[in-house]
Image (cartoon, rainbow, N blue to C red):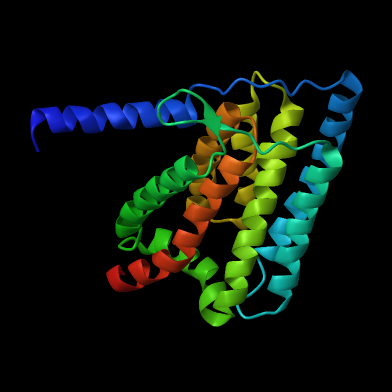
Length: 246
């Protein structure tokens, strides 16, 4: 690869990351003090209930049909709390040439694919370390032992519901100054209920990326697309990678 080509690639990547994760799209989502307090209260109650349901769902044995009901219930908690908290916005992203804005779909697909590639590279290491690999395989057993089609639906439904709450209701309820940090930490802590260290690390990294997306776009569409691209890719690609390399 020539020096000019390398420079063009670096320049394109720099522009991409600035547009997706750094420079906010102008908007005005100001709400009244009363609406803000109500959003915070609903978000706090939803967080407590959701954490309990999540801890229960992730400790159900693979193959137990209770798992499906529990995870759908969890999605209902996140989504219900998000919609009850107040208005949610789809948001807009910068166009490639910087001359306007559009819905954050194509950029989010690219960002989700990059995250997936990063995690697949990490899986090569994880597969060779039993103490890291085995808890992840136990979680993936829900797809192996149960219905993969149903687990796929659950992955989509819960991915959307999580973004509605964490990057929708909770992000808006925290306030502008610390929303990225607070929502990322809370998301990781809630995921810690599963008792899987690598899942907490994944939640922290993915949560940080989609929180920056939320900051830039002002809405939940970009985070939803990025989250689903990553989570569905992990669902289908991670098991064969771990099986082949372990």
